[in-house]
Image 1 (cartoon, rainbow, N blue to C red):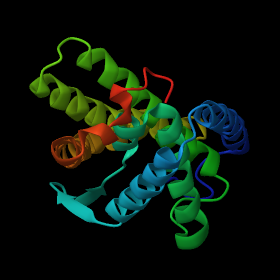
Image 2 (cartoon, rainbow, N blue to C red):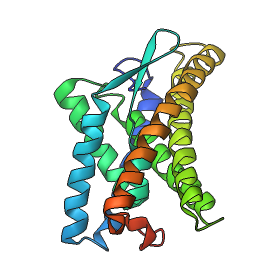
Image 3 (spheres, helix red, strand yellow):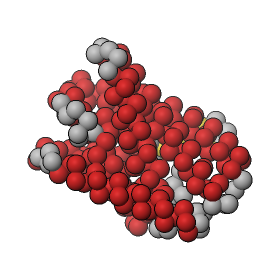
Image 4 (cartoon, rainbow, N blue to C red):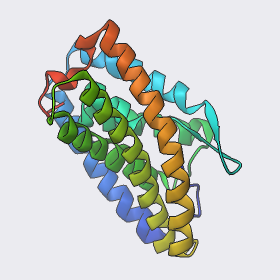
Length: 215
């Protein structure tokens, strides 16, 4: 899903870059309101976990593979604002150190995965979680939010490629979204397993249970 250099046109690169910069600035402003030692430490731990998780690929039918995106994981544990910062940092490191995703497409990649993916996942997670306080519903909300974060991010990536004229819109949408609907299943399983483990051993670390959407 990491768009490389040369795959989005100038207008798409600039517009997504501006929106991503604005979204990230707003996220940093929001996070500063509750910046505590525990939050800083958790952001570092979750960043490292997501970065390591993105290095491990899992095979899916059709001869392709996927890996953890981590947007929903960060959003559920630390909230959407901290989650957006974490994903942006991971994407910046991947771009400049590992050449995973183009520099000119960095704004688009951050927009798709760190802005749309994270905030979208959090909204879905909270909407479903409010329906019931049961553990089953909590894990269900995490799974659905995780799956949807991948699908929505792939939709916007395909949209940007189509708008840029890199590929035909219909072909790009079909190829990207259908594949990531399958990859999203892996995302949901991994994210739910990690959240369930945290919930079992240190439930107090899931900060979205104590921060009402301002995390």
